[in-house]
Length: 445
Ligand code: ATP
Ligand code: MG
Image (cartoon, rainbow, N blue to C red; front, top):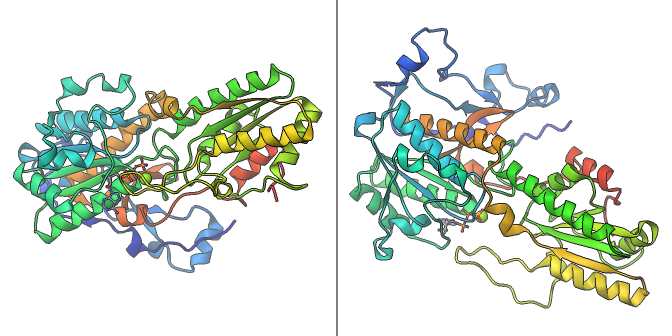
């Protein structure tokens, strides 16, 4: 097993607003016994490495091994709960579990820390900017009680750049001490800017993120919330495509799934159902033409078996589409070409030329997947992330996100969380499982 020496302790250290001097109000709940395992020992670390070969390759003493700060309640906290005001915002695209996170934050803040003043900012970072004129939403336990029954976000979301100076102006005007930011890489970069401006102005505002990525592409996190719900829903589309494909002569289903830069949803959804014949992911460019190309493989598959299912992540095969203009969304993210449509067109063209019968159905379930409520696993996961985020913020941690690494909840500096992307390793065991399940060649080249 490889031993990537990617990080050291300096990269993993989390900023704080100052010393913690206030007794945690959780004391009566968790007990005072010094042996209790509920409180986090501030000197403890969750090791970055988890194999003996990785640890040996570092060639350092045990206490110098890199490790993340563990998440969880501290005995002493930074903020006085009775005087703490909290803001929550959701930004970027939808993902299952957003409402669960909002609910988890509000319930933990109110029932355990007894924080009374929590507001939600509407429609992403626009909610802080006066000229948009959005009211804040008072977030009470009653207001959030059953919001997890629905997908989406009760606060709304948006894309597009906003001035971090104006955002901090708003936070100061409203006396917000803690800002919870739920969003993807762009949102987290924005949160880092907010934190930077607040620090420059000497404002003691804790900015804590709960990373949202349906694509599971944020690094240093075992799995992102909503991902399991998403690939479960995506697997249903593969099932539908399979039913269509097996019910017609020359039947072929093409399913386009999410995954701008990382093919995790495509891989997991495929493994969940095991009836896809080809999976195409952004990490692996593929060729259409020639003996080893995708089209020839599909032709043989249809002639041998009579049907085929192709799963394609939205970011795959972008290099095949050269005749369409490039554009960007409001946040400056490159808009992707519809690889599913293009692939379907090219497959039809090829089968026509080859004189092979084809009945192709194209299925794009994206909006159905991202807007469903969280499944039970993600409901549990989101509430636990929310608890971890509240403990972190109340202890004065800032410019960080919560995550789970090697199944333990941890704090990650925002800078590290946005420094790179988590991607499917074409030489790794996940991709190997996909190849085993589909029987496709390792590459179409
Ligand atoms: P998704 O996973 O859906 O793409 P995201 O959080 O990456 O989620 P974006 O639309 O890229 O979604 O960004 C959300 C918000 O963060 C937008 O208001 C955007 O302007 C802001 N933002 C993005 N990048 C930066 C940056 N580098 N600095 C400051 N703000 C940013
Ligand atoms: Mg993004």
